[in-house]
Each structure stands twice: as structure tokens, then as C-alpha cells.
Length: 261
Length: 261
DNA sequence: GAGTGGTCTAGACCACGAG
DNA sequence: TCGTGGTCTAGACCACTCT
Image (cartoon, rainbow over all chains, first blue to last red; front, side, top):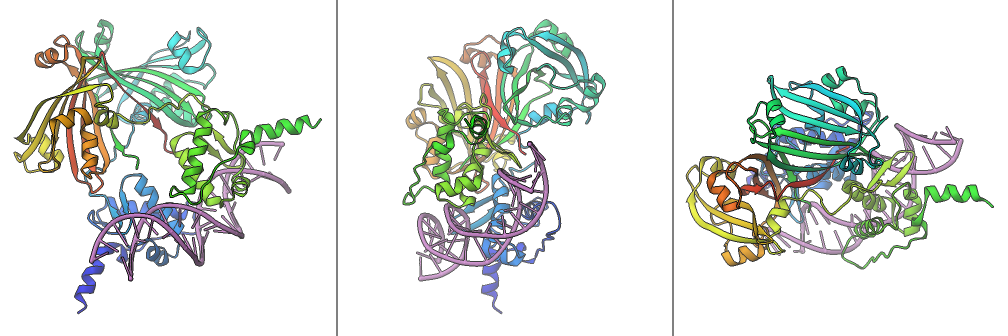
């Protein structure tokens, strides 16, 4: 009996009511984060169905023994990630699938972190040079001031994919070519206590010069993807200027955009 | 006298203490948002200096007559925008300038919204066609099912910049060519009650075909930027598949990345 | 040790959307 | 009208950083 009631409940609060969450108040990881992680896991595992769901926040907070603001904070973080949608007077729903995959808006991480995972990187140049005008402006250095120039060739599956040219402020960090090739620039920066905060990127295209073509194993005039980036740490200091070219036949940028509400 | 003390105060809590914020409790716009807007304005106007600043949250909340969580919410929104940085045991600082400009991670908006602002758009094709395999998969339609194909040529300053090819689910919305050219696709969707939520983009490059070259006023084989996008509304429904090509000599994507902490 | 942000609580009232 | 999320309050304790 009470089938109507059951059905109604099943629509508004599905799997969630029968799920249990393991919240450890002794853990150093915040409660809202624990909850968010477990909700996200439930979503990606398919335990939480895309359609409608997620009972109201008050009930949820009571059931979990948390305050409503804490539950809200957890839910909000998943909304910001694009996994959930909230509607007033309706409830919170799992977004209708499709979109999510492990993409995220990487390409900053991609480029800086990827080394050593499968792609290989070879340092071609590593020396101190006077800053070209554009680079000096980007890094906030006096024109012609010293910069560290880094030129690398990146391959995947043994075939070249990209020419990476980076300029760094002098004395930013110690760069060891061997570790650079095995660890990647990003991790070395992080290990040196540099916290990346933001970056400005420009992606374009142009035809390959003869030199680029030969180094990338392409024909002269082939279409190349170009990327320029200035990266800043959390104090606002420019820590890198990058000028990269990619073989368009073997590389593309892809990312997900979330629309700011 | 007390010069040392003055200097110390000037470092930790600058202009803010002498600034007044106009908070209207009767307004429908939330208090935390009013505060965030005024803080942002103060930052971009230069009233709030980049270096160090922003007195602690408790003082601020007392001075503004708000609760601390409310003040935190305002500050947090600016942190998320990349304008502020928080450090435990230190304080909240305005990020060291440079980075901010009205860029944001647009290009979704750019493309969909730009029409009618200066660039002009001309509808070249607008018809119902069977969905090609890749398009059908992206839109979640049966292969060969009906889709609305839209082909547009975009110019700036009278010269071609891009060929825009879009596929829309049938019956998504009424498309009037005249309004499409003057208003843009995005605004028409929004006006039709479609709330964009997220999009997946791939940016690459390739050489121009003869047909593209002639329509874009480039030479055959010239490097072109390509962009593919699938956009979703807030129910998770795919509402657009786009395949665009841009003249690399006259167009590039640029955007700002914020590093997730 | 002092001061900062990070987390959490237990309530409250309001605005919006659905029926 | 009722249920939902949206906003807001007034506290509390902890963890971290700097001195």
C-alpha cells in the first residue's frame, strides 16, 4: 500500500535516502568536502541518477547530522563544477549527464604537467639571454634584462608534437635539465614554492617555417597551432612567458566551459 | 610621531578603512553581492591598491554592520574571480594587478553574442538536413535524424573572418534569418527560454581548402583556426553543435585561466 | 602568543516556482 | 498555499602564519 506516497518520494528523493555517507569529524579534511567528494563519486558511479533528485537541503542536513550551511557548501561546490543544478521551488538535480568527463579546463596543466607521464620532453636550449621586447613587457622586466630561455621538444609515442619555448625571470628557481625532462616545469615550480594563480593565453594558428617543419617532422607551410601564455603566481608576479607551437595534425586544445550564472 | 605605527597601519588596512559602502537592505540585490560589486569597483578604479590590504573579516563585518559569513561570501566571490587572494594567518590581498582585463573565458559568448555589435553576420544556408553521424552523436539524435543546419559568414570591418557552421536540434526554436543576422544566435536562444549551462570545445588548426579559401579571402593552404563545440542547457540537453573555421591571420582565441586551489 | 582566515552550528526570514 | 533554495545572523572553535 501507500504506493502513491512511495512513488512520490521516489521521484523527489531517490537513491540518496538509502545511501549512507561516511563523515569523519576527526579527519583534517572538511566535512563539506568529504560530503562533496562522496556525492561526486555517487554521481560519476551512476548511483545517483541524472534525472531528478536530491532531497531538500534541510532534510539532508538532518539526516547527515550536519548544519544546513555545511550541506549547502558541499552542494554548491558541485554546482560550481557543473555537476548539479539548483532550481528554486523545485530542488537540486544531477545535471543530465553527457558533459562530464575528466577534461576540465586544463591545457595549462596539460602543458606544464604532462611530462613524464608518457610524453617525453627534451631540452634543446637552456641559457640566460637578454629579454626580447615583448617578453620583457610580459614578465615586467626591463627591456634587454636577463631572462632564462628554455627551449624544449615534446614527443608522444616517439614522434614530435610541439616546440615549447619558455622565458622565466632570472633567479626564479634552479632548473636542472634532467629533472626538467623527467618532472616537468610545473612541478619544479610548485616544488620551489611557487603557487600558480592565473594565466593569460592566446591560441592561434599559422604556417610552419622551414626550421619548425624540420624539427616537427612536418612539411613547410603546414598548419600549426600556436599558444602564447603569461602565467602569474598568487602575488601577481609574472613567472613565465611561453610561446609554443603544436603540430595541428597531432594536437588540439579541448576544454569545457561553464556558463557563469 | 608614531610614524612607525602609521606606516604599519597603512600596510595592513589601507584605503578600505576610509571608504564607505552604500548597502541597501531594501534592495532585491543581495547584500553580499552589493558589497562584492563595490569592492570590485574599488579595485578596478584603483581605489584599492594592489599590494597588501583589506583589514580582517571580523572588523570589516562590524564596520559594515553585516555578519561575518555575509562578508566572507562577498570576498569569496572576488577570490573566485581571481581579484583577491586569501592567506591564513596573513590576510586578504588584492591580486597584484596585470592579469585583470575584461577578457574572461569568453569565446563561447564571443561567438554567440558578438553579432550585431560591429561584426556583421550573413546567413548563407539555413535548412533542415539529416544529421551527419558525428553531429547526431553530439546532439543525441538518431543518426540521419533531422537537424537545422545554419551556415553563416562573419565579417569585421567588411572583411571575412570566419565560417560558422551550426547544427541545432529540430524544433528547438524559431529562427528568423533577419533577426539571426542582427541579434545573434545566443540571444535568440536566451530569448526562447534556453539557459546555457556548459559547453565542450576543441580548438585546432588545419590548412584551408579551396572553397574555404575563396570564401574567406585567403590563399588555398593557408593556416586556419578550427573550433568544434557542443553546448548544453541546464537540463543537460545538447542544444548546439558548432563547427567553425577562422582566418588565423585575423582571429585568435584568448582567455584567462584561474588555477583551482 | 596574537591575529588571520577556515570551518561549523542552529537557528531565521524571504523569494520564487509549482500545483 | 506550500515546498524549495536564497539569504542572513551571531556566535563558536580550530589551524595556520608571523613575530
